[in-house]
Image 1 (cartoon, rainbow, N blue to C red):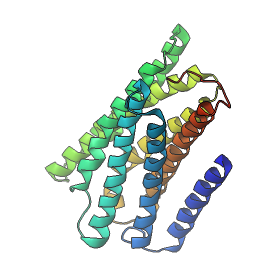
Image 2: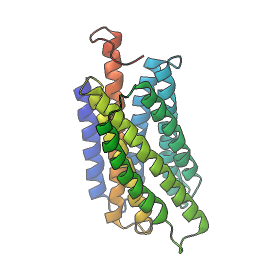
Image 3: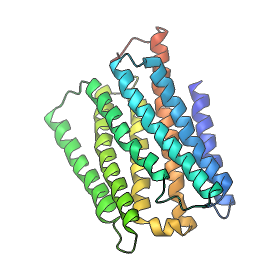
Image 4: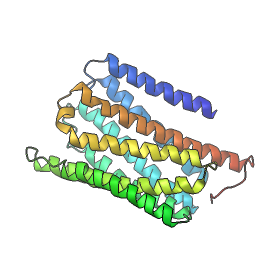
Length: 266
């Protein structure tokens, strides 16, 4: 079953990529905007499945509740983008859509932080130094390109404010990415190693796409096709989130059936 899910997600991404190449005006195309909505909807379905298996009554269930809500707000934002561009014919940035995108960041932050606290990470000097160095680089890059570089005197005050808020959100995601990496390292190739590694990569792709959007917003807004490729990065990120959370749910199912022993999940 898990292979069918994996290949289905790969096929969907290939289909989105092909349609991106075929359709000339991807910026305002209903088909492309509709296809971009599918990955976050799949992601929210996968993470909600994990939440249902855990239940709100468990500590980890609370963590996945916030992760579910955060992913849901991203999915709502993508739907809002579709409505704004195709049906309302209004500029989606900045607009009401950004509220949903931005609210997702603190919700995801809480969820990943709670999951990190559940992991009982055993810190060593080597691990602390390595992750600290990576965090300085990642936070420095997102802070510079997402906040400082994103400010443009030619933009309106609202555009600059929203851009800076996205930059702050990306800095938060950068910190969370390092926490996820700490969780990944702790599992040491156990049953949850691969799912969390996939989620780690998904988070990185999300940050990369957000930073590129901040740097090349004007080019993206003008509809230059080269800069529309960042939409494919976002789509890939959502599909990796979907598969990572699906794999967590799959392992939980095996645990509930007694196929494998309960391992660091309560």
